[in-house]
Length: 417
Image (cartoon, rainbow, N blue to C red; front, side, top):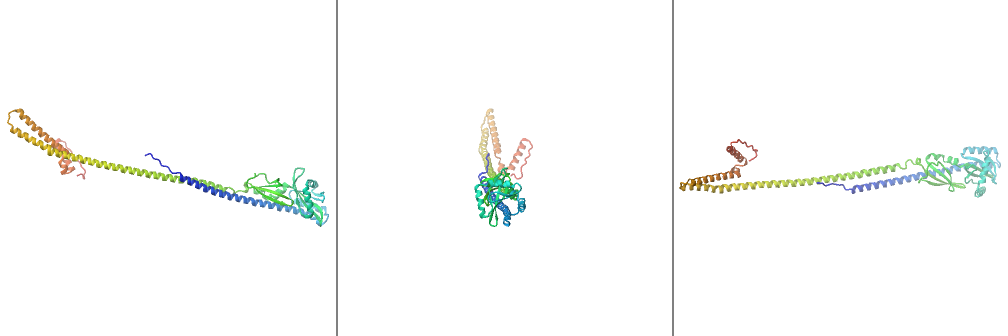
């Protein structure tokens, strides 16, 4: 019996597909949630940076406006007071490299520090026509103006801030503050430097500042606008690994755990089906063996019945032959012997040959009669029907011992009758 059993692969395959699909759905949902959280965190950081930049720039502009109020106290303030307050302002504002008073014709009158008039002249000379026209409008609006950044002769980018100066209602020129862009924005963004964000500031799509230059731009980048009087800065902010410490672990753990669970569940179902198939196969083999054993038992029973029937037929045939030999042939021989004896008595002859022939015939007939009786007895002893098997066997053994002189002992079971 060389049959093989096999477990169906459909159910494990379906379980694998369903569990894998569920794992991917949960993983995708977690990834979307993480993406939403990351975008939200980056947006909040962007709003915070934008608000800080606007507030800090307005604070620096107000500082220049406070310095410009010296002219509202006196039409021509004392130079010593201007120098004192200007120096104090520059010491409190990182990146401020020059503060100067520029008259309405854009000629530099006072400047701080020593040599600051050279910086002021470079800024004034670098102002384009659009900036000059906007400066003229400050005489009416009395608002400060943040100019476009410039690159000075020593290749340093600076940012000019113009604040109108009034003595009462009389326009007296501008208070010009010149700031280095890099230290200015580094000071403004100092609170965000250690948070793991990269901040890029552009002016009319022209990048003017980058916070670290160490974090490559990624898909989480957000944009914002910093509205300043006279110019808009465009921010582009994206996070680094430090800013997103919990971005991926949960979804990765769920994906890995889901894959492991998918494999375990699939193997469990497959092994269960395989075990079930093996049990069904063993049960089938047992049924087949049982059927085969039953069939063999029936064959043996049939063979036993057939053997018993054959033995019965043989015994009946022997009984029939013994009866026939005893009742027919033996009687005929017995009659022949009597006839021969009568013949020997009635025939009066002196011939020795005839007498001897008749005597030999009688002897032969007697011998045949004895042999027939012996054969009839051996074929079916009469005691077998009268007494049973055990007594018949004892009689047979005793007769053998008497005829042969050999001592024989018969041992039969007690239940043998």
